[in-house]
Picture 1: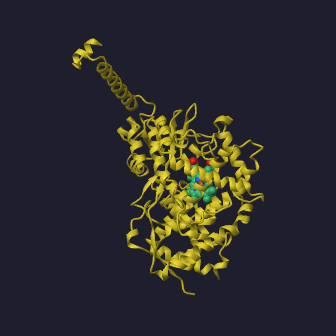
Picture 2: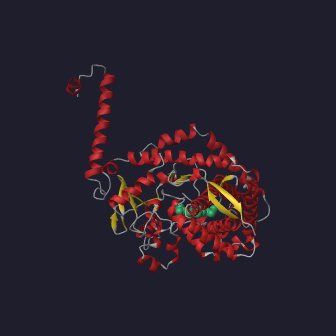
Picture 3: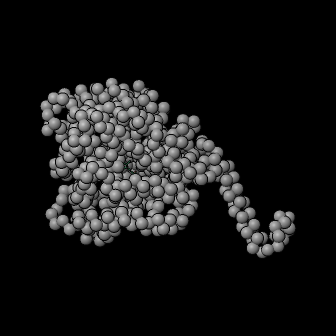
Length: 507
Ligand code: HEM
């Protein structure tokens, strides 16, 4: 060691010598890790850029800056249906990967009946109690069973008048604000206010009053900020700085504390309601004592239900509106379908919108081109390894299907960037002949952790879009051109305003 210090000629101070030694060891460790990752790691033969295979840092930087999903799609274009996007991390665009990663694992024992969610992505803040989206298998299936009644068709029939009440209010407000097509309205915000008000009522028994106040609620603004902040925390955890994240969350925690307090207050009011409610939360409320469910866990679940149930639906509606307004011939066909299907606005309800098949194809094509969850559904391969889309993948690997990549793959779709709802009107066989693998679109995921709110989401989206198209002609404001291309995505979209002129249809 003395010789090393002499050679380095770093002076005689012991502190300096040890500092140099430590830095030297770190550099040697990092260099050997990079070499191991590139040439000896079990995934080293999977295709992908060397930099991403060597270190976790490039992925983390992309993720923290909202460009990760877009880059991964480009990597798939270059390297094919499986790409190594981190040293121990694979992304797939072969549709078989849906079932292999997210489906029930046939023949596996109950502890590995599904690939578990990667906690690096889902349990970033260790002190927050788990909810349905990040609980382990056993706790998750209990939540799922308890909540399922609230999402059943029976429950939705009970919920319909309440949902309709908010959609009526949305339409009433839009008529007041549109100034006969002269005022431009940020419809992205209007959709958000509506879906938040609806889900607020469905979970807490009280709305956020966004439509009444024509403004965001502070709680919702916080959610937007936390989507960005959450990405930075995931990126830091991904590169091994999870402990730092816990400290950061405590230091910058004012907003977190405020929102938790607000959620807790709403949950308290909900629990104080003595009448049984056929809403999304009743299943958990009922089992509170039987399962000894802590108040904190109830509150975590309430928070997730509101986030999952509003953000995604509003995103799809905004995406569909933008795509329609940039494709006038498709909008004209939709206007024709909706306006000829009903004698009056009162005929538009949850069951009657089912006949609008062209509108459903439009919503599915919007979910494909502008998926609310672009990426982030990461699972860990269990002991023994697993076959994913024809590849053997060793245990411990992070595996995922990123919707942005899957939905824009030229191997899955004819003209993947084109807005063509027609592709969803064909049978799967006809579609395949035309170059469209319809099963590649799984906006709500598959398997035991798929979206429990899928039916509710379709009901809301179909009713809201039908009501707007029935009542208004729409025109995009110039400043909202290239609306999708100008956004970043942190697993969820960092949406920007979508300005539209609405002119009431004369009847
Ligand atoms: C267009 C609208 C929607 C889309 C695209 C969507 C998408 C998804 C996806 C992809 C997942 C799976 C997450 C994962 O694998 O980690 C999911 C789960 C979930 N979604 Fe949705 N969702 C939508 C609407 C809703 C609505 C309206 C609700 C109602 C509250 C809801 C509640 C949930 C819940 C509670 C989960 C967790 C389910 C579980 O882990 O068992 N979602 N959603």
